[in-house]
Length: 363
Image (tube, rainbow, N blue to C red; front, side):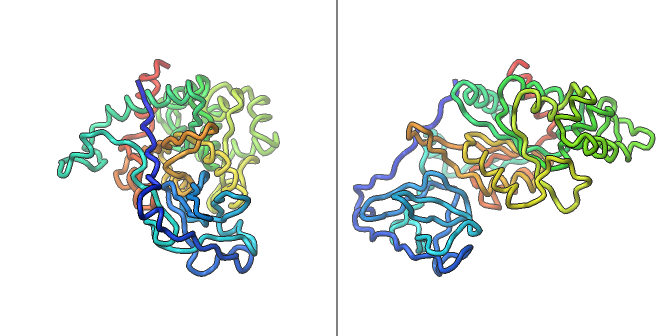
């Protein structure tokens, strides 16, 4: 049975905590700018000593700024700072400036603690991922049964295979998906599959290119735009398969963010970057598990907003699990180079990943 690891709270009776100064608060000089020597947050739980009391930033994200307001620490993006916001300054992490970054905060198995030297610890195409599949299956069951919030970040390759599309639709229908984050391409090619049976003009069942197939995604976008929305298109064209169709029919939110190379785009695509970012973060704030598949940019963007922990409504602190699935070792592990140090890479194609996960869940 899956079990969450215990959160280990810092021992605030230790001398370094007792003798630490209060964190220095300095007002933001203008909108969208922090004072000199501002503190930037990480993916880890961070505590700030205010008036002799250590306060946890309960809702955090990487590369943002801690602001003290109404007795709490709020973590804000630079663009959301307002003149006069009381920003924590100081760039130490072990109490010297009244700031403590709590990196080793969850229990780890004794075998991991004892291992000072070991082979095959990287995540590569040589890694055996059977145990990861088992863990993911048990994790998804746990999240469904315990009101978790599973956010999936999908690239267009997730829609290129008919069986994989069907598997993912079953995940949605059976309550293993709470939100999808993607771009214009994922929705376009998935809906193309339901509309014309192709993705980028290639048959999603036998992978054979179709005559004039390079028009298919454009015809799909054009038809959806004539309807004015994805739900109206699904209803009007009687679409009955795929990822986006399952989202619409099961009330699962999907967030589509635009890029500079988008065709169309579809009506639901956010064309303003920061509106889209705020919408992503509205889901990340609730996320207890994030699984990114075949999209480096969208997954790294989500990773930059995702801390390693979540404070639940009852005050319990639990880990946020993060997986990145890609055929490239480099892509699967790049999140770590961008600061998401707790993310686990799985090197495989998304079709095999989805089919294995669905098989493990009995779908």
